[in-house]
Length: 274
Image 1: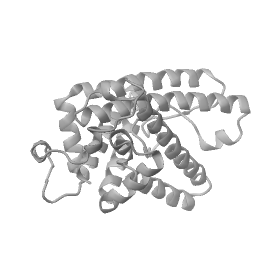
Image 2: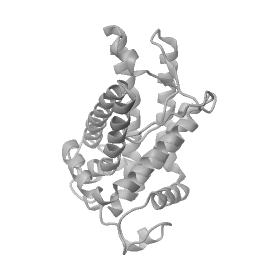
Image 3: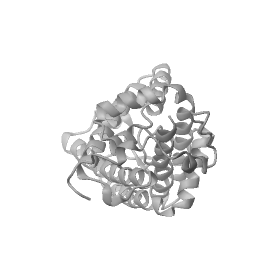
Image 4: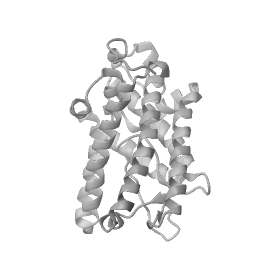
């Protein structure tokens, strides 16, 4: 990892070799565009070919599990994330590669917290987010054919800025969704659309050197034709994340390692095809 900023090589990542792309399942080089099924198949194909891509998010999952342990020990109420034993289904909408944590937080809890506990939550959230940002950056570079040694601090800082921004927007919408059911439906649909339109923003930051705002705008432009397919990917990833986090003892690690890696690789596949 270096301090510099990439100026060549990675910036041309949106034009992969046709024979390389065509070798993946679910790919049609001539037709263009993406499908949810094709993205998942191509992402799993790359992960099978390069299992080491799972390592960064496995480590990020361990960090998230440590954050969970701290959350269970502090006095702030925890909303346990688990499979719907009581007949309700919870869907996590991921606006950035990652997974779910066992120690959830009710939106109403945040509004009434004392400043010291609110500061603690912000720090813990930042630690977990930083781990997923590093994992995303490393995975994106590796999945695009590069090496993690090419990742620079400048890239990761920009990616962290992007992740913070999009997470704050999504979090604000979740708070709005807690008002009433009708508002919740529209807010969650907006979050789903936001995640779909910004799907290829992480590769744009890491490979093209875009700023967070420029990456968001460019991603919105490039995914306009495929927002339904990408929304399907986000929805399935969220459901899978919630299912995996329910696995006893290792739920957080498993959810982050599996869903985070698949999601991050899927952003590269979409980046190459959109």
